[in-house]
Image 1 (cartoon, rainbow, N blue to C red):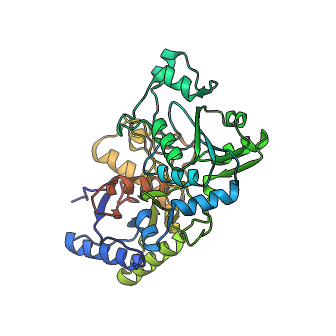
Image 2 (cartoon, helix red, strand yellow; image 1 turned 60 degrees about the horizontal axis):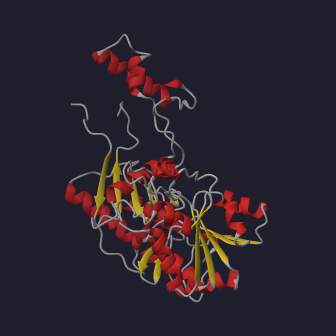
Image 3 (cartoon, one colour; image 1 turned 90 degrees about the horizontal axis):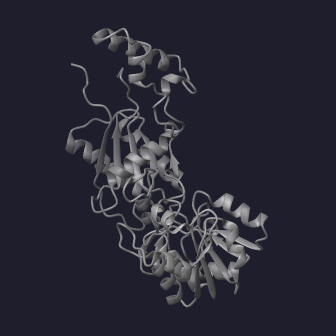
Length: 399
């Protein structure tokens, strides 16, 4: 009988990870225990995905608000600092903002609107239309914003992020002024010293600011790139990808990720004789049609992975072949014709880039696709499955 199941994604339970734990060994032991418990075999091209959170936790990669403040103070001194384009998140940015504010005397907080870059909305677009506001050109003060829109609360969290962020700043001892704009240059009417906090657009934002007269510009990925007063750090991403740990501590994005991936791969090969691919994953990249957020608050979906996960899918759209190339066939003849087409593509390593037969397939990197699958499988709550084991992802209709 033909195999009737394709890709399978399993959440694998693991012990609670603490600083100093041998995470690579824990991952391998957990996967092998799951395979024995659930009676599945380990195959070549299976994928182990490990959430970045437990990697950072095992490394003890944490920083306090005071350590963040010390780094900010060393870079900005007593300047009025424009905090530009932060995302709206109690988990992702609030504690970072608290630490930043502790290192400043005055902050001009400039929020993008109607939403931040990852889709957290301050306002509905329809409300902007109703009030005649153009978000691409209009710069709003806090008073104007309140007169127009009142106190808007997030659809899911019930938080008024304008009030919440302003209160965080003032409670940390800094003066706060809030404005709303989507053009980075608008902040330069208030200060020429800027910390831009956007994630995926940060390089462009920084370039625009410098080209238009900013005297001092740092991005969030330049804060805590090295240890400050014994803190954790991330030499590539700084505070980007950090999460709230406590009310005064953040967990940073993990470091030395490739070492971890390579060690897990080596241990699995030694234990099973199989070539199992390995990756570390953070946020996936997918959009919520109701809450509007598209999730990816980490700087990348996967900071490290084995070589077999590099690249993009080279897949054909089965329905395209059925409706076009083999429209005259049906039943077993159609099935065999499609299988032969795929086999020839694989055996000859034919690149399908730019061909019509790929239309409708997802043009994304493998690590982004698999990382998103892993993130959805593990969830963000209390499932207790920081390891995801994926089988059959690289199979196709011929296997």
